[in-house]
Length: 342
Image: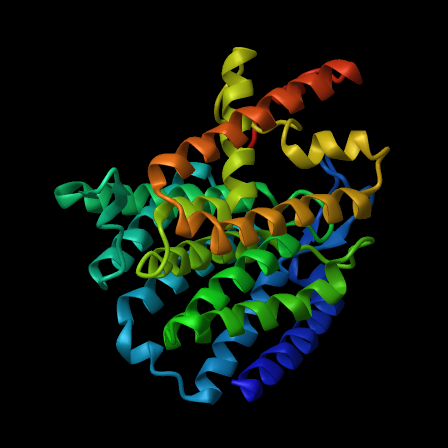
């Protein structure tokens, strides 16, 4: 496994470096707009490079994943492919959703699905025929939620490193080779990318990175349900989930479109709170994610879900209340955009 970590890390660094050099000629650049946190044209699409390191290293390592989960591998390439296409030429949100839904269906057919919501007051809530729609909702929802976290230099990468570490730990203590293997290649490839993405970023991951990361983390999370409760997963991957739900709640309150882009995400608000300091904002959000991940693994999993699920919703409404209070205190308006992704 050490060889796998090292070779993936080195490949990621080298491939991202070369992508930066040729990004302009390949048409992989991010041009600043009214919602951007960066002020200059920046190479993007680094997900193409660091996920290529994952593909190459797994082939070199002789992984059995290609044989054990053929439909999952196909689903990975579907999401990766639509992400690459979106980095080259912006794709309609409906098209991306459709591709991710089909990919999630492939994952379910390959035997990876959510079949229970856990135990409540001694009763196991089996999903039966609802297993498929719940699995699709979870995968598509989290993939999009993680995509929305990619708003500041190093933010999505930092959040993912924390979540992947937590899921990898669960795989390690339970001797789940699939979870260990996938966590290692995701972590090491992402770590190589972060060398170039930390503020001030030399390159952005693009949808090829954020969509594929969100998709694979969702798959790992479903695998982790064999060892932890569904509520534990909500805590382990809390920030993207809380951010997305709170944004939707605030859009409804302000009678705004639920799908148009804006600057009302957690990182936008905290960036104002920290006087425009990207590093402080990212470190703060990553620290909060670390708190939730540790809480989910070492505490939430050992307490009845009838108590921990209300606790998660308590955090949701606490965050919502705090964000509303902070925005009111600093007189921050609700930013509305005319078009774009959520």
